[in-house]
Image (cartoon, rainbow, N blue to C red; front, side, top):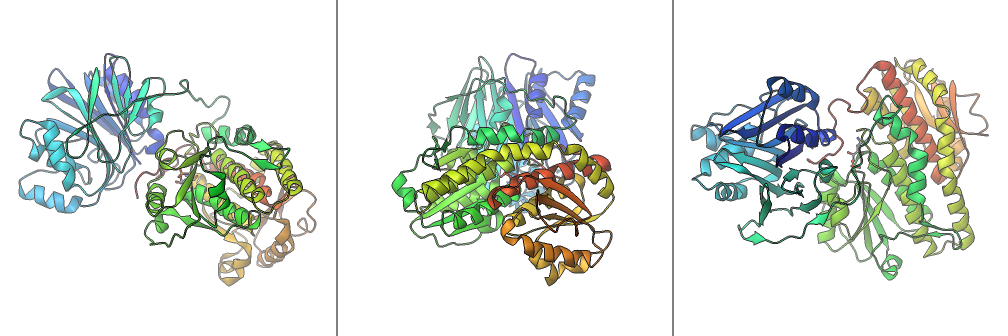
Length: 608
Ligand code: M6R
């Protein structure tokens, strides 16, 4: 989850490195550090908190470096502290190293190194790597690195420098991405492409097990046997996308408001109105194979899992293909049976989620075809899948996913339509489906126009410490997503539940201080959820309904209502979750929590 960055080149090394590192701050932001070599000395600065704190310190002390590596941390082993912040050093402070990932056998390695007299300064798993390399160093740094790697168990992307080699950075990738950025007379290393925005012109992705030796004017790449590997660099497409908050107080709010546009772009040029179907230019799978799909497994985590859950309902109901959505972190440790005709869909905004990547690699190895649904171009999942259906939502900076979620649902809807039309769904029904889907951006607009009213509602309930979010069918994953938003940014305990399950236990928690947000837009189960809400009311629980215009009977039950436009059950979850996003945002604002970078979280979850 941490972000790592390295720079060697003619520009101001400290400034360039910190600028690049800041673009990775979404990966973790509890501490940061930079180390480099200047006039033969190893110099560094580490701070707890955001990168800007380290930047201010570095500026004040006038740090100058000729080469640098840096890291922004999301703590795994050891609390966020200066000692645990990266870079870590060997005892002589000749070698500095930054790491993203986890070293699973760090305890055994630490014991072994302690016996050799090594002194440790942190609680991190990372520190063992730097001491191990140092212990194996006999004057040839690459050889020492190569000798250390087979002793490490786990996932790691590393960047390291040594005082004896003041003109080179070594980068290592092992089940954790690392890219080499190529400029003119300058080179970069970063744990993701995004850090190169506005700097490198070309990029090379290291494959797992590869090691790069990067110098100002060139690079060499080696495989795990230390044999040179020749790799083609790729041009970095797209202009530097400098994203700002514009008139919005937070990126999260800006991204919530970008949803009509993001949805339009997800649908753009993918709808074939005449035939009531969909197409994806990037879908590189034979139609005959798609026709032969007998079963679908959707893999995802967090918000993407909830989008996948909606996909499960849709693919079964509309395309009539047995579908199962799975939480990647659990699925990766199953030994599933993958019969012929199984299609895997991996959903991930970042395309770097370690659990999803591991689960889908396993299924790929078992012979399944994998389609990715990702937002980030050239991310690991997008690159490794057989095809990638991009969200086109634009970069999502807020750690709490908003526009990516609704775009994921839109892309899954189109994919469902494509599969359904290849089977039994009539052209007329396909056209109705498309027609309704294309109206969703306007429905979202209608919800956004109620932002002031939703803010007032958020103020009314902001002091409550427990919430339920209820829904049925399509609204059940919507309820879980709504609850997740409130947890993530307002730090409030919120449980997303299928409304029918309340009576089986959770209803014991209902009282006048525990509001229920009810997503009632699923018309097929509308009467049923009304009864469930009556049961909540009977126990003095306040009810905030997110209901479709024209819904009858809800006004008699709910204390407050957010009205959303009426649409098909499959799509109603989109405006409903947008209402939940706004509600969570304004509750968080009222409570004064950190919204764009909530505590303990990271945007890209690259560790298990
Ligand atoms: O990048 P991914 O979509 O694979 O990320 C999965 C989850 O980590 C992510 O959705 C997380 O739950 C978000 N912070 C939710 O807002």
